[in-house]
Structures are given as structure tokens and as C-alpha cells.
Image (cartoon, rainbow, N blue to C red; front, side):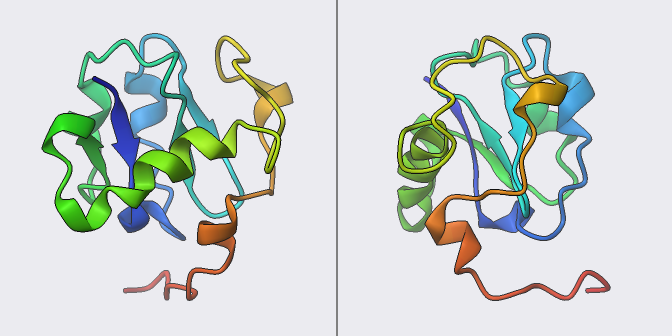
Length: 112
């Protein structure tokens, strides 16, 4: 099992999940955050602190949100950042890049 960040985070990026993650497996893109599926230890702390309910366990992911499994995984692959498995989020692993699904997502008004 792993946790997945979905569309509710796009253009919100509250980042409450970052300090909650004990293994720093949550990475910053340009418009959203991404959880590295191989680095996640399935503790669930990120889900409990997300104010917009953008984070879900993969085994409880609503059917309409299942494409976000691939979005989170592919963000780290050759099509987007080419980071592979960096071993933990740090200043070198922040980017303005996003997965193409996120980049093409309609802009969300940050005021609601």
C-alpha cells in the first residue's frame, strides 16, 4: 500500500503533509505535491493532516481517482523529472515541473 496525492492539491499545496512525513517521501512540483510510491512507508500521517482531503491510501482510493496512482509514479520517471528514487525530498528535488495531467489541469482560484 502507498498513499496518493490527488487533484484536490492542485493550486492549493497547503504543505501540512511535508513535516508530517517521517521519511520525506512527498515532493514539490509546480502546482501540486507528489508522493513517491516506493519511498512511502504507509504510515498515513500525511492523510491525517491534509486540510483538503487530497491524500488517500491506494486501497481506499475512489474509482474516479485511480489515475492519480500513475500521476504520482510517473512524476519521478523519465517522462517528467527523471529523479527515479531520490531517497527523500530536499532542496535539490523541488521543481516547477508537473506531470502532464497536472500541467493541463484548469487553474483553480486560490481564493476559493
